[in-house]
Length: 484
Image 1 (cartoon, helix red, strand yellow):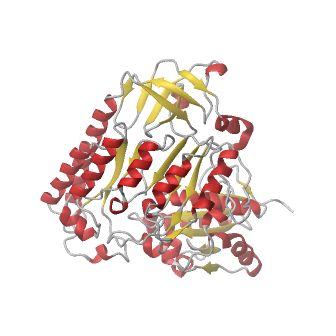
Image 2 (cartoon, helix red, strand yellow):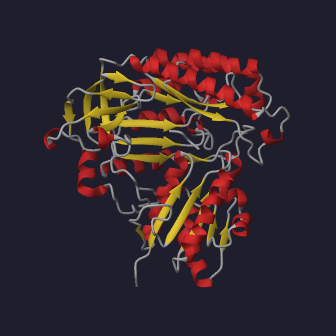
Image 3 (tube, helix red, strand yellow):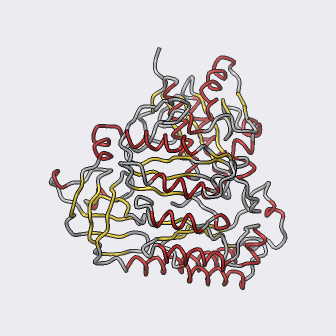
């Protein structure tokens, strides 16, 4: 029997990227192999769309791609198409109604059911739609095919208890469900044993961790526990919520050497009136106070954010408040979005929808300010040395510019000129000191020779071919940026 191939197409946030690694692991555990081809379907026998429902036109994007796949499927006998993720959770039967050539629709709560649903669709020759309202098993309990041998995602919670009026995620991911600290730390230790040296803790509201089992200091404790794991060099987390960001977390970040001095703190708006309308339970001065305390504890911290422009009811005065807070915050980068109506959210029916030309004008002004501040902040690094951990895929022009790229400890992107001597060439996962010679708004460049090149276990893992890892099984019930 010929081995079937698969291809997973991922849209959206880091949580979806994490889920896609689990989807790949499940399919490989079921005997499939990753397709070697290029393009939308990669020539695969099974194509899985892991969808996002957050941004505008997510529906059109999905159905446009599914329309293309209908033609591909006609010329590929036995091919199957599956749709999962937030759009599947939201649209359910509508997907098969609009695209009857889809074989499987599964939701955010039952990722583990995909192999069974594919087989059932094949045997019954009928579409299978299975959407669960509650989480069947924590995604981290599923097998995984990790994309990187030296860096990994670790989910600590799923779902969200907030009620932001612009966000549909709580309706699609459900209420917050927390993993036990021992399970999280066991997964991290196992990843480190496999060569992983950097982990990112994931949650829809990551610093609310512990709410389910009644420990408001659980997240700070988890960060400190990460600092006790030998071989774990870098720890990051995303995304926190200002209302839950407490001083014990700041202290844990500052006092735990492997917790990196970078923070992604979503602002959304600088206007207190708009924050209230968004149902964001903090105001601009509280937000700025958090940033001030973070920088007092970690002067080197790089802080990034999310901002929405044109939320219903936003006036020019409201927008100027956002510009004021951005100016005061000195973000190293910002993910900026034009507000878009998401059906099913309270904001979708609010009065005062802002005309598109007004939103576009404000968006362009905000981007100019964000880029200017980021460039000012980056120029401070010219002539300084930074520690870079090299990685695959960080520099799109690396091959043509004879560079390798990676991330500084504060998560700034660094492009480094390298020579041809293999003995001096860093591998993905390796760490070295780079002298910054030029700064741009979104990256730093180094054109001087690297210093202190350190061969790491993560680099060894990459060199041994574990950048193409096998699915990782689960033992004892425990598991192995412009966001759209």
